[in-house]
Length: 487
Image 1 (cartoon, rainbow, N blue to C red):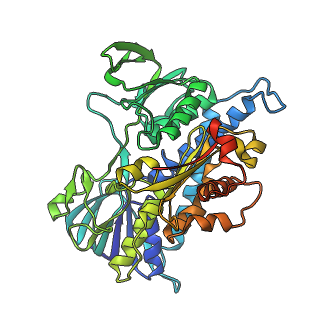
Image 2 (cartoon, helix red, strand yellow):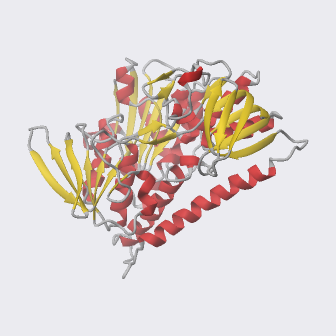
Image 3 (tube, rainbow, N blue to C red):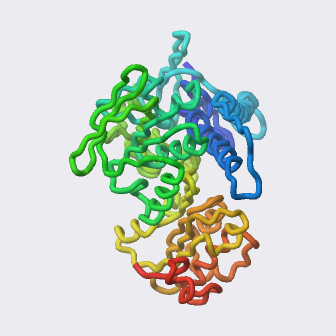
């Protein structure tokens, strides 16, 4: 039996970040991982899909004919693309594994982190059994535990994923070539990202099934509409407000039936189907409920990372509060600080920024208009179309807009920001910091922004809200290029 200060289940973003914070505090840590170090944060998830997205954008730009050049005889190989994706993943995994190898020995600079490969199951609130792939078993005892096992793709009832014709994001890398046609089931973030990727490469006809009246239903209507319009330009067919009634493999293809709001059914045959309807916490087989950890609707119930069992904590997708890599890292670090007697500041979830890798890119922080109305938060909004922003004009990428929300009462505290356009994420972090610090709209107006840069559009939104924009709403407002409103 081996004894540690902390045992972490899962070496994905949350678990790895927690292990490094525990190392800072001089603790002896067992980091248990059943698969590959890095989890879905790099494998079949965040890093791999974003690498694929960037490569697809390279191809899309190369195929454009409105930039003073024309590419000829451009060849794109799915195998070569995936080899590049795997190289990016391997680079990151090598960095993580190199660090773990160095931290397995005691040093004057911190604690010890030991990687344990295998499947873990709780025997008691202070013990886990870890079974290796070779059938061996070892028992680990620890004062504290952190569950950070992440999530897996959710599969609806009635759909049989075979990993070849009907797949999830876990199977993308194994495809032999670009499908000639593919249906994407689910119009949330991941489904829309993969629809963008395959449409960008120009080798696959994409159909997208959306049960809602519009894609990205959690975002404002104007955000979703820009993305939907872009999809249509890419040749993507969106089955709006449609229900998937049936899906099966037939003669080496996928046959599916959708029903529209009028009750009309349509049968369509495609080469592949990608099921992307969200993710589910990967906590099966851990034995959590048997030791008293409260689980509801398949997710661990936690209050500021602490579960119903005092020495057991949870971080990341296992709680399904906010399923993002950066959130998992913050929660993992906070859990460690809390369990070892520090008093960490609470995570300001309202100041978290996120990116959707679509066409165009969508970046967000804080409240949008839909959320503000639902929470009954009075607000003012300033909105500037990208056609008025110098950097977007120079990039020849003027699709989209920038939208800033502030409290309606003075001094107009900043509530949120949405940027829809190329390199949208470049405008996020400054606003996230201001929201976290309780900043007001005047803080944006008086800051000297770089030129030409996308954040200048945020500054112009702030000026519009204050009634002193450089470009005037009475000139550009009638064309909906710049306006200010209350909600």
